Length: 204
Image (cartoon, rainbow, N blue to C red; front, top):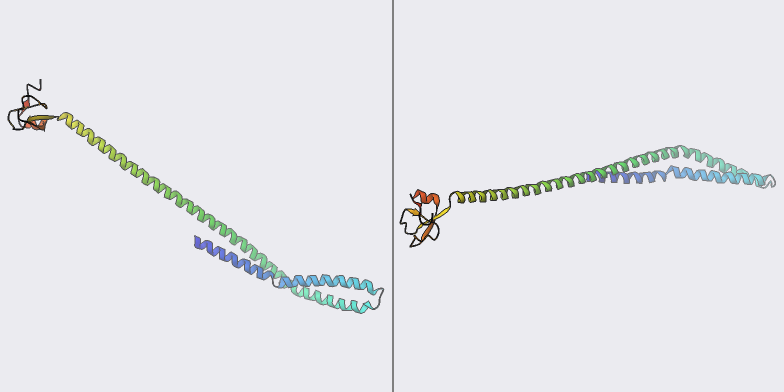
């Protein structure tokens, strides 16, 4: 896209240079000839008025008339190429305007593309943030589920105590007075698997 804009700018500069060059050619010469014809016309009119009173001015009048005819012929000779050159210049101006319009359209496309890219980047960033939040929420839910499961497991299978020596056939609560030589914590299901039953002293 940027390459296209640069090409449009270069083409526009070329049209401006070519346009200037055209106006500096035959059209300028034609305008100079027009000015000379106008100037000689005024001189002829003034000299003709003087020649009516002063015959000495007749020769000057004739010379000016010859110069006027030559200037008119030169102007007529330059008119066709000047008109052609003017038409070419107008065509180049139209092309220049079209090139400028294309340049503006290309710049607008670049701006629109940049805006779309910014929107896409923002959307990707939002999706990534949402994915992180979803993972965090899932981790929190997993932790909560594990904690709840642990609580339920503890509630269904509480900790009980047996003598450290392994003697007896009972399981006890912590600090039961019937345990003389230390105690070991085990789950209720483990104690039952050992064939132990609740102590009649601490589990009344």
